[in-house]
Length: 501
Image 1 (cartoon, helix red, strand yellow):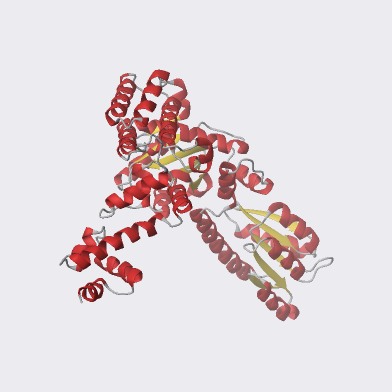
Image 2 (cartoon, helix red, strand yellow):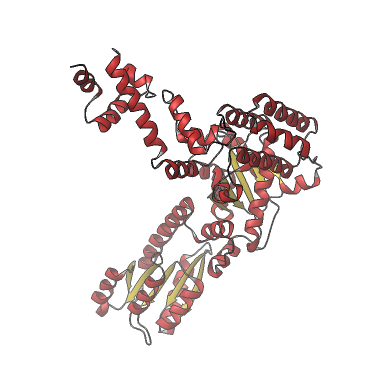
């Protein structure tokens, strides 16, 4: 529904204008409120937040310009149309410079009013769609704040949410490889819903590349199956977790976490997982035994790569034999192993709360095989990078990063790769830790190491600039030349010539 406020002190003129608007509104899309002066108009505006205000200029208590000023203090998007007699024409036109959207002359002709409403409807439709596409509409913002904040209460926003959703479900979506553009994604959903799309759906991009859809409850699986099929056909295969239906706006966070928990079952294969159905289907429990945990921890401490590999293999063989294991058990297993990794490299779990909040848990994996491969790879890297120093003490993370750079400077490595594939840590956390311990960023340190080796090669050997770039970890020769010049003040070729002279 589109909300309109008419403000006019003359009763006959006001009722006549309302009648004209209703005659224009053949489809019954307008909700109309009336006020007899600017003060009443301001109160109704604050209560109902109309998208269009049509107001006379000359009124008692507060005139039209005063009302316009009050509205603009509250909202810059509401369209305000000024009505004036011909004698006040210049006065009305000056209102345009103060934020009015247009003006009408008294007596208001049907044709002039129709043109005014046509422009309003078109602009209103475009603005609403733009707000929905960008997630800036009031309802989407309420959903985002309700999910992301510990406690949130927005009275006006909640009322708007309730008008759209008497009941709702939340769907958590995770794409397997690449994800579509926002507008392309929305266009696919619009194809399913048709004209009722925007009145039944809101979309948000959450953390860990999870997308959240809030829809009215569906009686069957048609919507989700159709959406999955469309996305897959376009090259965006995805899995979905769907919450139960809720009516209370205050349970949006619960519904989202419920959908996310259901989505965790994608580890058993892509598809649509309904929270309500999962609760009715039995799943097995699994817990890491104390003996196996101690053995794994000892193998990590001793750098026993084969020992850690055998334990992880045995754990996942048991998981596969049990069939479908509860997602919370898999999450607990994963968290426990991660904790043992942290302990093996001398990291205090309590000091890493900020980093842990960025961890996606088992949602990062597409299958049990992916999870097993990741855990085995981390174990191998910890063992191979010599987390135990010769004296029996543990090396710090910054020292491990330093050794990695010194040993593999000639490879295509980055802190992002180290964070995700080697040390299973947050990239920002690693960057801060290295800079704090070494007084230089990891990227700058790696570049210094590469430049030092590049100088040696240019001084002692007869390699071309392209060969030296490749031998020091740069696939892009122009990038190597740029960095080298920043380091030495001259190009690699000039450096080579000057040294040999």
